[in-house]
Length: 127
Image (cartoon, rainbow, N blue to C red; front, side, top):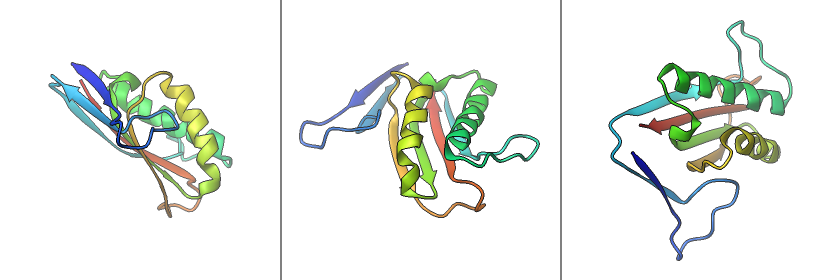
């Protein structure tokens, strides 16, 4: 499988560790990761945004690993934040988790199902 970032010269440069588009060539598997929430198996939800981001990414990573994949297989990530004020922390944690990998990315500021949840992430991976 080959993953190629696409950043057209006629579009704005991406910022925040993503590409404008991502081409996947030769993939034989797709994994659609449902919205992962900042809650552990015991129902604990951290109070602060950084801990919630880390827990959500741990849940995304767990789903990937259960399918035999890693964050390097992510081709599309959609992040839902309950407030714009959380964008900087979200970006910092995402960059830490993904390292050099830059999937296609969307961040949406919106209401989230449970008011205790400040962030939720869904993703698509290819292999």
